[in-house]
Image 1 (cartoon, one colour):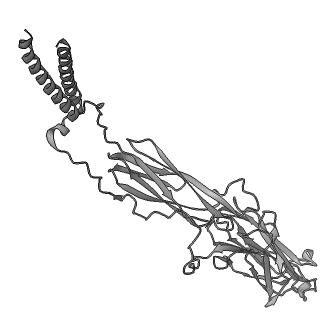
Image 2 (cartoon, one colour):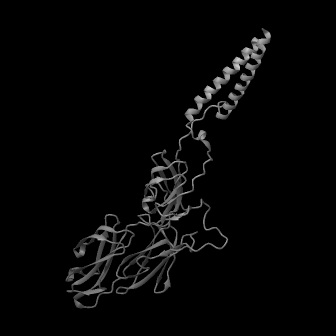
Image 3 (cartoon, one colour):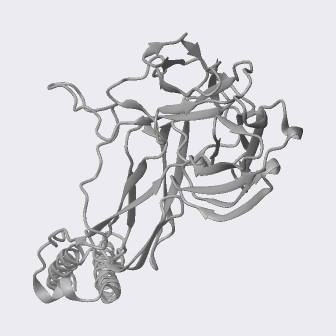
Length: 442
């Protein structure tokens, strides 16, 4: 009985061992000893960056920033949008392939609207900032903030009107005297609803629009002169203002000759010449020349409107006209290679018979700053700007190569691998169990 069981036991043990070994090899091959991993679906990822000038910039200049958006994932992105209200940027890309990127440029002119309302009166700079937002159908919104420093020296948007009254130096009794009132836009923006009044001349006019640098002239008569106008002089004043520009005044005096005789000698009339320097703070030096002779150097002080102003008072003889030329110094610390003083309406005025004249000078950045010396950095350290690309262009990067795939087994759906591995594992486990039981029986 024992001898008949021995061959059976040995045979069973051999078959069980072979079956167990085959099961182990199959399970190892199909990954039964590790947890099955489900395949991940491809996904796109949205990258966003913004590059702006290192600064500082000047008032009245243009700010341009380059925005870059890229698909850093492995699936296409659709309806990609890029927006920045501060830079006036609103772009859309229909589709952005994996590895592709696009660049856009947004810009704005820096003016008074960008100056913070709580900026200190003596401040020389402020920061202008914004945030770029990007989004797509497949990703969450992304944002990137930026900020640039601005030098607060040049006021690029000031409304100002000028007025001048002119007439003869002398007139006789019985004569009709003709005066001229000239109104000019001496500011940086167009003016609307400019009012002009000269009460003694009965002049009251409204100019609908006065463009930057434009002038309008009005003529008005006074007279004939009578003895009631004696002893003279005949003083005529005019005023001008607009919705945005403050009121300014001018005055002229004409000597009166009684009964056709020579005009009486009157005390020399006063003539005021004011210089307003825009774009700098108070304290800068201002110079004036009369007939080529340099007068006392004055320093600007804030006027009622907060402008830097200096005023000379002259006393030209009655009937004479003096020519006054003015100039202003750059503020301390200002680089003459970057800044200049300009007179938009000219730096020379002629005054007589009690005139009041105002000359406006602007401190402005030069059109072309000097190039940096060889070996010297071009400006303050900052992030390197991105290379510009035309708006809407897409630079496609080559996709990353896939791992090689061989055989139908690798291409089979992952869902079929787990059940097959489980069946083979169960068969192996049963074979091992049977072999163990049989060994115990023996």
